[in-house]
Image 1 (cartoon, rainbow, N blue to C red):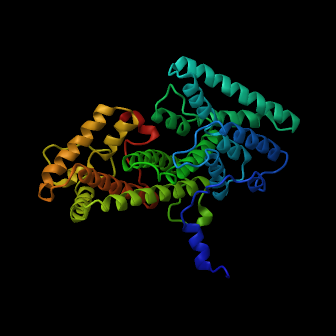
Image 2 (cartoon, rainbow, N blue to C red):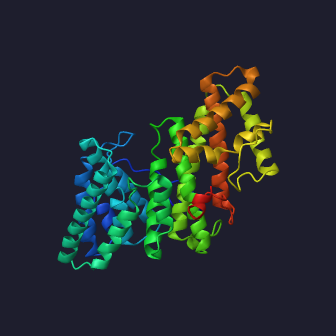
Length: 384
């Protein structure tokens, strides 16, 4: 069938899908020149051997599929840089090895884990330098790959926010750009692989994406590289990755809405949706992180602390998280008492509410050029 202009444009706008089989090395080498392809081949072989020892992903897929999808997405974003591909291939390698060591040694001692992490980094660097010397690869390239691998590692001494902030504030502009690109590709594949997660886990994973996407949008605006609704030819590779990650996360939220809608809450959903729209018109909703108003009786109050609630979970502030969750459930129990909802239905109502509201954040990030969610990005991390 002949490719039409309409179909070609559909291919531009279509959501990326994950590849669920191990792609051969040859699938990636056409985008990498020689002798750099030899170093990438070395990393592919090494990483594949290492991943044999790591647990399968929650969806049952071979863990090595994940870094391969990252490299694939980087190539789809029109990136032609083997340093970024190499970083994508090994972006989880250090962390995965430390996690395996932690399990095998049955230890949570941070000092022990950090010592082992340094050993893993040293051995990886030595292997790369040896390979580079055989293929006339500049040592500066190896230093760049190692720096990327380190900044993309979620070190045990740091919480998630600290880890992401280090990516977006790295002093080397080239390293920072590559790391952001790899992270966006990483989160795109992660959010496309949520089938085996509970709805609460899915919401949490999607929320992590919103923090990263909000920071990425701020980064693009600061670099004057955000085009938004401009033509495909004008999008930078980073913005292409940003767009696809937004769309993948949007799709995940829509699926959460659909799945919870099937749990007998259909009659109250219009009330929740209209309350959300009133919230956005009447308050600073979706422009800043806001607070719960105990005096407000309208259900729009349910939208005021979505970000704060999941922020507590991301910080492992479990008591605060439960406080937010129980407060919302108690309100819904009283407000919707005529419907005699079960605990599971009340939770479905809240899941729907959160997913519906956060899709709107994604829409604004994608299509409102100057939009960022205030007090919720790497630059404003400690003011939330």
